[in-house]
Image (tube, rainbow, N blue to C red; front, side, top):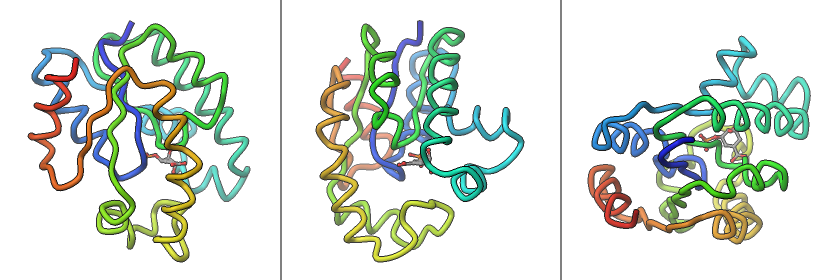
Length: 164
Ligand code: S3P
């Protein structure tokens, strides 16, 4: 069973903070986005473009299930993993930290990142919609919430350890 699962929007720092947390806790780190790219042999953007979002969510659900079954340590999920009810159900019984950020922080951090397929046009509007659609889902699965606005990865890591 993983020690800790990180959820939250893309660009919030799940991978960076996850690696720091794993270091502090003396455990391993795993990221379902990386697992998917390794297993599929192509980028997440390619899967989105080639097969669509719902096919990606099905692949992601399997990746989350496998990672939860076969990994002890810190696990970072993709920002949209919580959209799937069965994926959310897989998180029951685990310690889940929601790394949150507000819309302006999100635009600052990821607004120009074209590698993220959900944010290609009008990032501020898309961020607002994404946050509105997802915030309650992150809160539903979380056992702790850590705000990242204006904080360095080290500060977020410390706050997450305090929140455990
Ligand atoms: C997504 C977030 C991404 C990745 C995919 C979809 C989303 O993960 O899974 O591009 O729907 O928010 P990160 O949160 O690691 O960027």
